[in-house]
Image (tube, rainbow, N blue to C red):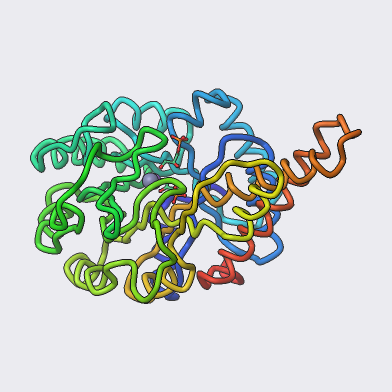
Length: 328
Ligand code: G3H
Ligand code: 13P
Ligand code: NA
Ligand code: ZN
């Protein structure tokens, strides 16, 4: 059944687990996530960016998710809009049947220029008023995502502020979070605690703490009834990088957020964990491998089935690691 983000994450908070929010753009990604959820008895957040709606087409995306719900009637599914750049984008998603929307007012509508607090409060409060009137949940964002190691926002995919950020800009302030929640009424809040989008997060193998875990606990204490969201949570598996490289991929040395660090984040109050890049890496690695090792094959289903299987394995591992398994 379709469920709002608020209800889904209330359960996660009551039972102390985190829910991966996987980005979807096509049939194979929806298949992979739903098969992983079925196998592990996990609740699901499917999130679609504006880019996903542009790629698949709004109606196709909606019907893919409706098909998932029909096929898996016992699994709660939240359909969430990722990184809405304006109230208009959020309203389109609500009209399209999304049960949750993100108003990302941490950046201007070009999704690049960091903006002022008053703008963020105003647009996010406006979206909350519209969404809550029809039972749809809202995620806001406060702070600028960025790697604490590189000072880089990770601007691939057109998401993230341009250029280098100061350390202070890169961590969400707990007092400001309390004020933001009071002024907007968001159900969930994306926080900046050292993650960044895309495959290039860290240039060296992460040792010790790579995220500001203490800061998560401080923000959680400041806004105990608002569910914390960690964007940029891909772990960038070295096994998939090795397969990509082995079969012709040109991927520079890079590291992601270790799964154990995400698990520490969940223990400190994170409830929604956004993952896109890891699925891309696994699917593309599996496709490169299939195409290189079976050169006489030309049925696209073979390559896409390999990609689906790779993504399913990855999703299953995250459902289990985050304590989501058995909670559907
Ligand atoms: O945070 C951004 C997500 O990875 C979505 O990326 O805009 O390329 O669909 P996209
Ligand atoms: P990754 O690029 O780390 O997968 O993050 C995805 C994300 O935050 C989507 O909103
Ligand atoms: Na989101
Ligand atoms: Zn994001």
